[in-house]
Length: 403
Image (cartoon, rainbow, N blue to C red; front, side):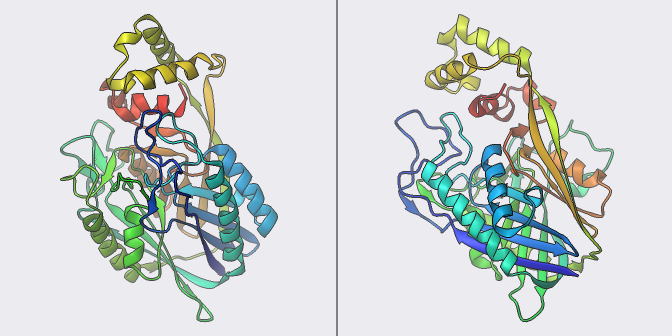
């Protein structure tokens, strides 16, 4: 027997809170001046037999490991669900503050962090209190015009992907997954979905969830969103690099509506959770080379991979304080099996190839790879991105303060 419940809470940032996701020089921060759509934290509680889990979807740009660990602790204390069974996922909207610091790309507001702690804990408790017997359905549908590979003019899609595919090509995952819970006792049905597209449609100072918020306004029951592998993916059909919000939302909502109405029941015999860590090695040789480059010729570190002179100077100051004996980063990863449906949770923004590879090679018929979860470590690009000095491979580590 599957029990499922949901809780939601608002996380509206105060005016003046710094928005994340786009560069700003010091003194010219992109700060909240109003609210386009109310941002939320959504919690999904699941229970099968004696095993319980909670999945959170938070309208924020990013999460730090320390934030997630503390939130997991609070939720365990409040609900009894083990902290190790709580997944904390960011939607990665670029129209909200971050909960992980970015160098000149978004700072952490203590007030916003406190708000999210309280609201997320409240939503988790409400989800557990809302638990009711449920049938789970999984539907899929390819989205036309909802996303595009932002790094190349032509790419291959998930329809062409196989176990023999390689990262010599650039890819795009157009498949949307809809998880629909039909519940007993006249309880409201629940809808969660997974798709791959950066929420970057808006660049102004109005806060909100970006295109997922527009989708949520068009579908009932109001859906919760889990982000996919979008390291090289933007919203829209590619004609406008940041995507057109109504057109992007229309394409995704159309597919979501179809998927939720044409799902197959998930045969659930168990709920199993496996957690681990992966040691991500730093490229210390490149890191030292960057430090030497700035040290010897700072006047040349003013554009390109250095962004601008001010950013280069600020990065050099953080790099100078780095412990050169620290050569790797311990990142959390986890898997959750709900019957024959598997969730893979990780803290990166994968290039499309790697997300498709996970889905294709995992030993389950249905796999949902969720990014931006329980931490944030930046992009996992292909080797070509390093050869071409792409932003994702070269600039973002500087923004994150990691070699």
